[in-house]
Image 1 (cartoon, rainbow, N blue to C red):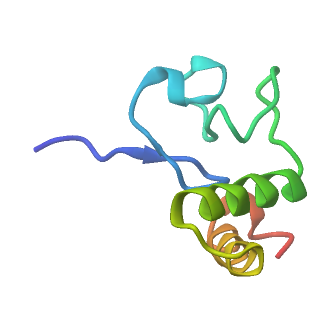
Image 2: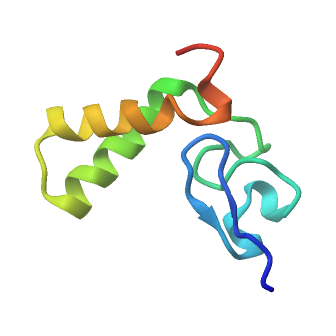
Image 3: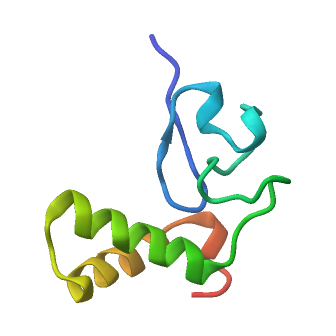
Length: 84
């Protein structure tokens, strides 16, 4: 049986390779995109904007629809449960 792929506790991105993790540390709970150069979690607004932009570009949807998708995703993630 194969091991379950970890996912970012902020954006939900699958973290399959060491370089996907913050600081290249496979024990880190966040991905390289959701953290700064020191491995600290970026502010919610930045993560929301990154996710909305990804949805717009990858799915060709409007900014409003992309923002709604991003909000709905982030509210299910451990990093944001306390603030949402």
